[in-house]
Each structure stands twice: as C-alpha cells, then as structure tokens.
Length: 58
Ligand SMILES: [Zn+2]
Image (cartoon, rainbow, N blue to C red):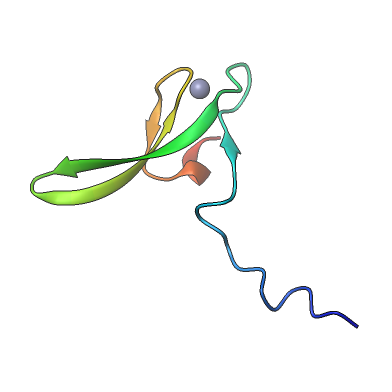
C-alpha cells in the first residue's frame, strides 16, 4: 500500500485558487509592505479583490 496521506500537506505555493463565481479569476499571492512588515496577500487578478489568504475567497 502506498502511503498517500503522509506527504500531502497543505501546499501553499503549488495549489491554485480561483475567485468565486461570477468572477472566476485566478487568485495570485502578492507581497506587500505594511508598517515595515512584509505581508502576503491574496489578490484576484481579474476583479482585484484582496483577501488575507486565498481560502478567504468564498
Ligand atoms: Zn475575482
């Protein structure tokens, strides 16, 4: 039996996310500076909606 579940972590960089309908645009990660800190934000490249993480697009 192959160990399928052991290496399947929540992949942050390889997984693709898409904006919910009716937009359907691809969500890209972007790095922004805010108050001297680096933040990663998720942005829909179609409607420019910004969320803190791709899973916040619902
Ligand atoms: Zn969108």
